[in-house]
Length: 146
View (tube, rainbow, N blue to C red):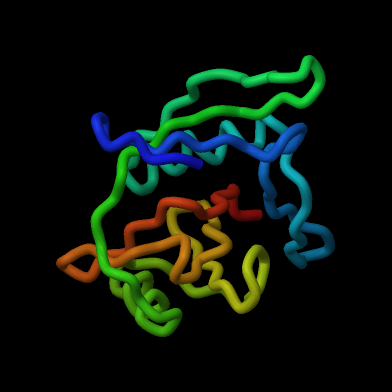
């Protein structure tokens, strides 16, 4: 990941031959696993739709002929660092339901649901708070609710 000051964009590269992570359901329980490239791209679309972001696909990078990475850009977001408890309160105030599962993604991370989608891996390194106290996610997993 790198920040381009002239444009205000963050350039993000997936790990070689990876497409991040996603959450699926089996027997009413969520589980974390490697995402397919389509899962990753759908996650970016959902990020734009649910949170008004402007993540864009730039392409694939294949520097050695066999280790590809997905490249996206995302505008820099402004906000304040928050504790996990503050993030939980901000999502509740924004109309999200807190789900009982923690730690799918980063240890102790939160998960929430709203409008048929689940948002995973909510913790201070992935979500800021706006000046008005709303959550500003920039690196979360978003999946359809079961």
